[in-house]
Image (cartoon, rainbow, N blue to C red; front, side):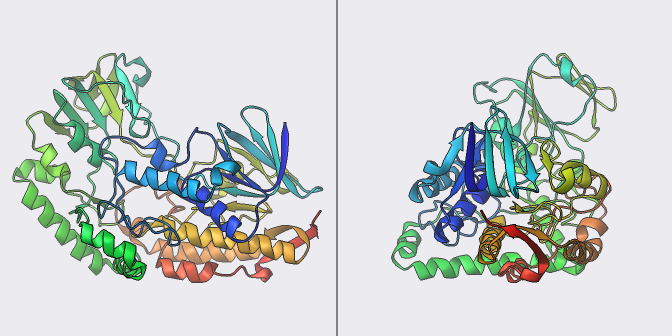
Length: 490
């Protein structure tokens, strides 16, 4: 089966749904959304581990045009965010446009017809003038390569694929990784398990979490006077912009944050040995800064052991650390993050003259213009593409800027009766040069650590280096001179 539409959107997280809404607002309704799962939600559908919550306040981590006055907490948990996304899909009647259970395997540009053919696992094809990727970089779990990992006889899973059928009560559990997911689910499972061995490679910087239940009067005020909620949202946004200075060549600001984090650590951990284990030796911001009020206390439990010796191998019923000590366990949970800088290597995307996107990015690094378009791949757009993720603010803000930019690009092509638009190589090169000049002086490069922000060559292909309002300014309008328009629309 082959479907023909003007626009194909891939994914139904914040990015995919946000793009569809912008198309609807622009009167562009000849589109389809492809979703591999059976429900919308993206990251917030897939990650359902105990304690899963957002580390950006809910009133900001939501669409500016679809505010929710009824958030229960300042930092909402996964079920509430998931429900919000389902509600947005229902309100805008987007389910009519979604093809659930459709997993794409690749896409090929036809230079003669000037259109994309999107292939799927089922063998069905979708032909479209424009292709928008809303899959993001947090959807393919990263499982570490460990000797003997396939020999383990117990239960094992990644935090993003949580096994809710397995009862952890009374079990001996190993958790590998101490990143954003682990510091949320470890405090939740620690009281139930018999023994929990937490394998830490690098300790994260952890700030106190200013989380609180929103009082009824505040919700009522937000509902009756929407302008108050907009002011509240704006205040959160402006406060969260401040760390951008510290991330980008002003380390004194990060030192202030480090002092707050160290006070938080010292207040919650009295054991000097344990404190040394969890104190980072790199500049704050080099890795993702985390927030938690219950992670450190969880480490003090008698049934929890923080192991910093690393994993040597996995055996049938145990994990062996690098000191040769064998830890017998019934289950292993990986809190080891996602494939980010190589997230699209599994897709076969070919552009002009059969150019392979995966091969080019593997050889040269992920290169785009504004994190959205790629030279040589006409009419292809990325939402939350390379160098547009954030370490300090809400990515939903970035998604809104990008989805509006995509609509403006489509309108540009339509207004010129053009079938295709392709960003000029010189424009892309200039953007890459400018952004990497900023990144090389940033904390991600100079902070003394390795992180998932960096690709295999040590280049930051993930983070936007600066204020998000600058990105909003730069993407408000598509510059026609940045693109080569070609062909006549059918």
